[in-house]
Each structure stands twice: as C-alpha cells, then as structure tokens.
Image (cartoon, rainbow, N blue to C red; front, side, top):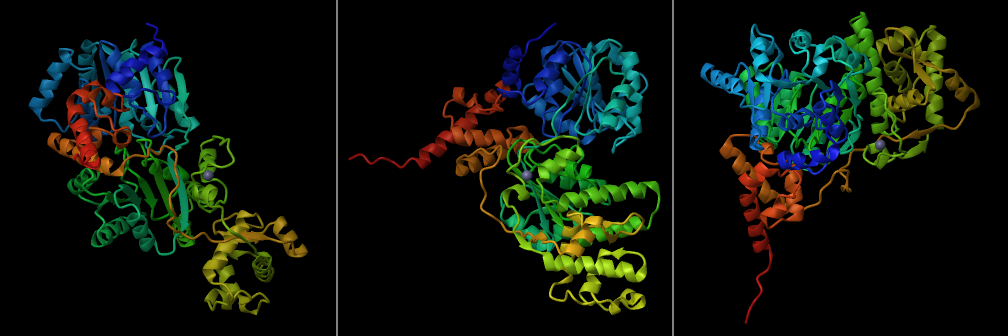
Length: 611
Ligand SMILES: [Zn+2]
C-alpha cells in the first residue's frame, strides 16, 4: 500500500486535532505504512509518539509499543482513549482480573495499540500468543536503552533482538530522543533493522530560551525568578538530595508550592510528589537528576539548574523537559566557580579512565556556561549540528550582549602573576592560588612557597577574589592562559599570553552579567491571547480532568487553550478548527468549552442601555 502525504492530513485532524505535521513525522508515518523499518531520532517535544500512533489507526491490526516507562503507560493510554483510540497496556500494576480482561480483548482484536515493557514482552509464552494478534507494527520507544554506549543502558532491552526472529515480516520502528552516532548504529544492529530508513531531526528547540546567571545568592535568585512567574510550573534541578529537600521546604515557607523528588525517597512519596506535579497540584518540583526520564508533562514552563550539571548531554536532556507543548519556555542555569571547584575536587579523588572522561565533559559544560557566543549554537555544535544564523534571539548572549571594559591593566597583573609564580616554583598553580597571591592572601601555601615575596603579591587588592576569578576565566576563554595537562587544574601562560605580557597589548574584557528580571519580549511559539479567558478555560479543564481522574494536559494542551482564548470560537464548528481538537474531544468537551467562552464574552461586553 502506498500512501501519499496529502491523505494523512485528514486522519491527523480527525484523531489528534492537528492540521500540520511536525518535522519528519509525515515521512516516518508514510514509511511505516509502506512496511519499512524506520529509525527515528526526534528531540523531546518533537512528537515521537504520533509516528507510530497514526499508522496504528490507519491499519487493521495491532501495534505493539515497547517502552521501559511503566509509570507513564497509564497516562499515554488515557490520552489515547480520551481521543477515542482503542489502546491498552499490560504491566505489573494491573490486578489479575483486569489483566485477564485485557488479554481477552487482545485475542478478540479489540485494540489498535498495546503498550508493554520489554521484560514482560519477553516473558515465556508472550510472543507465541502475540503471533495470533495480527501484529502490524512493533515500535521500540527509548530505543537507546538497548545500547551499552548510551547513557541509559538497560539489559532487558537486549532481549528485544529476538523480536525479529519471532516476527520476521512485521516492520519495526525504533525511536529515541537521544543518541550519538555510535549509539544510533548500535540500535540498528541490535534490533536487526532491515534496510532501515533513518530520520534524524534537528536538536534545536526553538521555543526554549537559554540563560546562564552568575550564582551569587542562589536561593534569593530562584525565589525572585519564581515570583516573577506566579502561574507557571517548572523543575529545579539540584546536585544533591539534601539541597532538593531543603529547597522545597524553604520555597513552601515562602509561599511557593513545591515538592522534592530524589532517589533517596520512599517510592511511595516519590510517586506522590511526581503525581502532584503532573496534575498541577504543586507548581515546582525540586529534584535531582533522578527526576525526568519519561516525564511527559507538556506544560513545564521553566527548568532551573540550581547547581552545575556534570555534562552537556545531561543538561540538554534536562532542559529539554521544558516546553514540550511548543510554547515559549525558559532554561536558567546558576553558575559559580565554586560549583566547578567542588566537582573538580571530587573527580581529583579518582584517577581512572572514567574520571578522565568526566573531567573532559565537565570542561565542556564550563565552557558552555562561560561562553559569550550564542548558547543555542554552542549546544547544537556539541551534537554535531551547525546553527546557520548570527543570532538565535533567544539566549542571554544574543539578547543582552554584555558590556565590555578595558581590562589591559587587570590582564597584565594576572598574567604576570601567573608568570612569576611559575618562575619562582618551577611549576604552575591553580586559579585559586593565583587570585590569593594577587589579593595578598595569607595562606600556608603562599608562605611555604615564598609567594608573598613575589613582586606581584598583593598588587590586585582593588578587586575582590571573586572578580579576579572572573578575569581569570575570561583570560582562559581568550586563550591567554590555559589549563595545564595533568591531574590538577593549574594554569599557565600560552604563547599568546606571553606575547600580550611582553607587548602590553590592549585587552577588552566583558563585565560579569547581572541577573535582572527584564520585561519580556515576544518569543518563538508565543500565542497571545486573552489571559483572563485562558485562566477560566484552564479552570474548566482542571474540573473535567479531576472528574476523570487524569492529568489536565490529557484533556487539552496549554497551546490548545491559548488558541481558544485567542480565537474565541463561539460555535461548535469553529471550536473544532482549534489545533488539538479532534473528533472525539469535540464531541466530549466541545459544548462545555464553547459555553464557557460564550459566558465569558457575555460578561465582558458592556450592556447596552436601551431607553
Ligand atoms: Zn543565541
């Protein structure tokens, strides 16, 4: 069966309520319908699920969806059922009679989609039974879990190799949001995909704004950030369980509904807090990196990194949890040299290959935090992608270029101090030591090395140590000093640095950025709408969601509500045109929402006095 792209728009609107495909979706769906094996790398929020859900609806048989995220299956299936799609799941959360009923349904061919975890699928006898189900497609979600090279290897995924033997003629689709070249090849090989069509979408997330702020007083900065966004929901990532706990407590005390989430908590408390966040009962979750895998909340409006992430890949994944619904969302990283030093100290206690890799990754993370270049371009470059434009218009460096100042004298002082120290001791020292010498510190290291006898001792008392640290990082960035190879992060002059020192060249430095809440400008993906109506529609959505005992976003996304509050459809037919309103949702919720809009318009229009 060959399908042309045009035909697909009708079922897309009918079942999912969308007029347009996201990038690559149409191609992937078409290939799947034509029976090809497909490998698809789509970023978080790129609409991965639709790639197998739409083909499942257009064919007679069953699509098996393999996913490791048991906690998510219920939500995914609820979302499909709310759109009128026959879907079910099998996992350990079901009691025996419920599981049996679902098995009977499968044998009778009542379902279009079955969600199942790999360990269950590979149970004795499961696949044999599945042979009777007219399986049309097998979709492997989070496919990177099959690869040892990936960051989330799960041994039970390895068993999925057997699928090809059991179902030699059923097309397979492997999907992931994260995979390096090596992992990609491994997935195709392990799953024995045949002549697979590979789709790799851009890693760019146009609706996310990236900002890095110097971490001066982390709690006050965070509170200010949250208070400036009183109705928005988001995640704050912390480095330790302790911070996650205490931060949530402090925020609660200051009137911000927040709950912690980390691996040290009881499973029951963890899921309770997660559930409260998914259902918008608390608007902030303070979490360690244990939180997030498979969190499907589309209206996460911000992700704050309270501490420095260990590597760019993790940072990208964590920030990627913001703005899945395509609306503008913010990523803020609080950055301090102290955080870097802490991590370096920790790594310096180890000296194996793993620690070397971790050090290299940390250096890249620090370079990202300190760059004056576009952050989007820097992130994309990390994933091997070129950003074609000068400015992205949605990162701090593009939006607010930093002020610069003539730093010639400061640079001379710093460079000559590095030079004198090395000359005196025969080897180089770390940045901390250099700034201690510059500011005339009285440490044991300085006294025992005789560095208080240097001509540069105390010549930088006009600045604080913190400011010298920043200047040191600028000089690193400019390539005038470099971190010497070896276990300790010591700094030494580069040939360019020697040149500058000798010829007293003019050096321009950038000022430390300040964090200020600025008036917002229009951002990518923004839907301007009547905010009062949006609030009313949100309350209505909440009421319906509570009645059905599902998270609010399963009823309608924030993006759909904003569309409604912008277009204000007063008749059912117009309401059906809103993106995200499919046939089933129109039937179930259309009347209530249209009534709410009409009621709002009636109260808003001033009554005309008739004499
Ligand atoms: Zn930028």
